[in-house]
Amino acid sequence: MDVATLERVSNVELRHLAAMAAIAEEGSFGRAAARLGYTQSTVSQQIAALERAVGGPVFDRPGGPKAVRLTPLGSVVLDQGRALLAKAQALTDAVDRFKAGDGRIDIGTFQSVSNVILPSVVRRLRGEHPGCDIRLFEEEPEQPRIGDLDLLFYDGRIDGDVEHRKLLDDPYLLVAGAGTFPDGPVPLERLDGAPMVAWPLICDQPVMEQAIARGGARPQIVFRSAVNDTLLSMVRAGLGSAVLPWLAIHGAGIPPDGRLSIHELRPSLPPREIYLHWQAGRIQSPLAGRAVEIAVEVAAELAPPSAGIGA
Image (cartoon, rainbow, N blue to C red; front, top):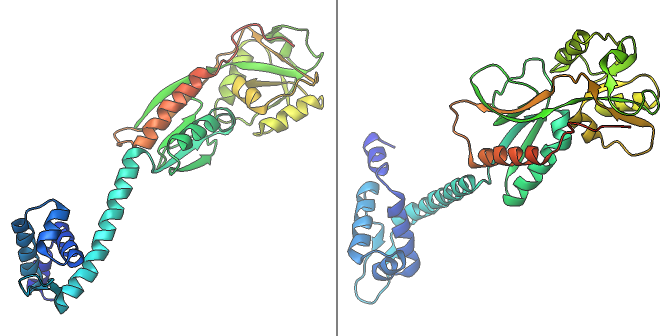
């Protein structure tokens, strides 16, 4: 295609093609104008502009009551034009769905949030937007990054150009085999030298263990695992006790079988802080914005214990 033709064709507008398709389907300029809500002169002007752009007539106009007919050039233009109109409609539909919240959202998460908070977030999002595409990525790196994620849950603030919303304070509790400690709160000093199972030294775990040490206790760590259920199984087996955040305990759904007891510590440890992060300066999709709102609502509905934990 020469440059002059390319320049002319670039002047074709979707409204010209829509008018042409309506005329071809209705058989007259007048009926096409009525269908489109235009005056007949406006439709004629649009077709005239289209014909200048493509370099020839697209309709034969026999006059009188006879229907207008496509020229050979008009058939080529209409065939390609309908494909363009279909793509434009698909684009319009996609934009409308995006604005309505039926887009894609990528969320970074970690074990406790995946078990307790995210199921409610996902269920509500899909209930409101059945066509949405939710992708979850569960990692617990030492230095998390948002990257291409829309949202990132993490137990603490993260570095970088990010915005955040604190969701809740997640208190640490002692999980022990039944009868290991008397009912009620356990003095922190009772953990000194006691066998314990624990998470690896990632995320908030080093901070928590340092707080235990400052309280005068140095437990004997006999096993480390990043899987909450595994740690609780080892507590049941008598390998040792565990200090875990409430979300981890709650998410594990400990059955009331009498084999485990849950205690507060005295003095209590600083709680783990759960945050939701997103890239600063990035325009959030309506779906991501709604996910933040729902996450805040779900976190507010949770009730981490503040007192009265016993066996």
